[in-house]
Image (cartoon, rainbow, N blue to C red; front, side):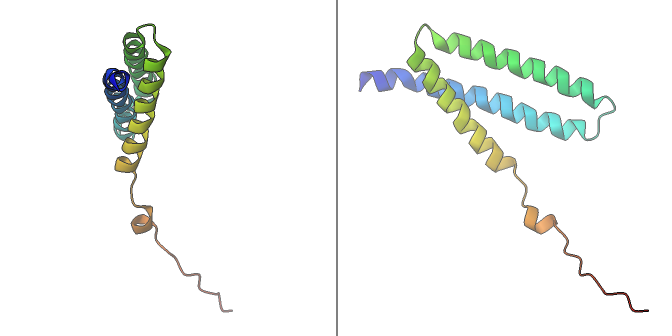
Length: 104
């Protein structure tokens, strides 16, 4: 039981890292839609998000593969949550067009 409590900070750290990574990706996509230099925005965002994520995983690791695994689980949980939050309802945006046969 004590080990489980010791792994909780790793889970929360992974969730925070995942939120930063995938939330940052979502923000980058939103900004790139209207940016003049979208490629530069994507590359710089990727480098910053990756550096923050790798540094976070490195500090959580502390020579324990269990902490790394729990941190990865938190990261993937954050991915699922961010994906569900940012997903748009495609059913309301899709327009159904009825095809009318051409009469000659």
